[in-house]
Amino acid sequence: MIETDILVIGAGPCGLFTVFEAGLVKLRCHLIDALPQPGGQLAEIYPKKPIYDIPGFPMIMAGELVSNLMKQAEPFNPGFTLGERAEHIEKMEDGRWKVTTNRGTVHAAPVIAIAAGLGSFEPRKPEIPNLLNFEDKGVEYIIKDPEKFRDKNVVISGGGDSALDWTIFLADVAKRVTLVHRRSSFRGHLDSVHKVTELAATGKINIVTNSEVTGLNGSDNLESVTITNFDTEDITNLEADYFIPLFGLSPKLGPLKNWDLNLHKESITVNPIDCSTNIPGIYAVGDINDYPGKLRLILCGFHEATMMVQSAYKYINPDKNLVLKYTTVSGVKAF
Image (tube, rainbow, N blue to C red; front, side, top):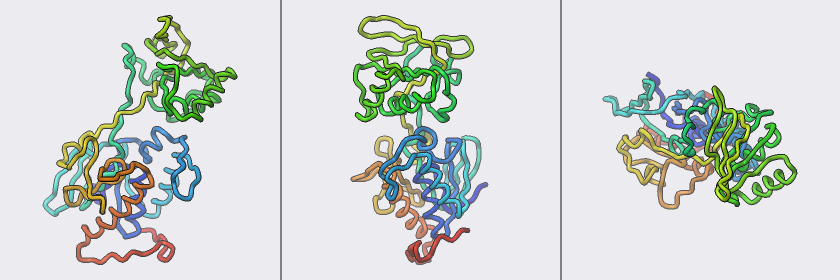
């Protein structure tokens, strides 16, 4: 059994910052995340995306922010259970919570802090008959390592920011990038739309609009895609090593729905003062929670984590007074 003071469900930015804030008051954290590495969406989906609203950083890449948060948490020696999903919860006789993952790993802590973002994510998949046959054989829903696509023929589907951003990025990596969109106009940021249009004008990429990928072809691996034009009904087979449909992700609360927490749609209702839930000893911070005036921003999640830790300390140590000490005076003392 893995024992700790605060068991954090989710190793995204808010979960990682919870480690730092807890460490300042001598509370240890252990984090559980279904993803194979810390960082949440920032590491898994958007490592190369720029973030502009982190105080003190006019611009920071998502992956760099994760690295910085890991360095900030390092003095407090957090534990990690990665690649596993928090599944079952029960109250033990000593008052602590027992949480078991889908792989049977057992954890115990007096406090649980749910920092699971929008929950677990599943990619929205296009309705192509043999799509599943080519998953991991040319069909990718998330770009983890852009170098995988170096000198390859890549077809991207989608019209939002993610499709536009990766089209721009891979233009200098892949042998050929083709962007396929169902409509004639894109719904992403204007700056990205302009860049994609300029790349197409100079022949760096191909844009196919009013069309969609309707078929995948190949033997063991993907070899080409079939594209159908809505206006002319023309069908084109295009050579492709990779097909990347970027239609967004569908968030799911998953097992958390069975934890008897008060929910509002796909979010956990909390007290905005300290992010406590309806169950004593369980808190929720970041995108997973909901309260009047809620803003789903990373910087707001950092604030919530700070307030939550102060409350968690009092919950764990009801007979002790917690005196706020500024880090400029006390410094950061490792365990």
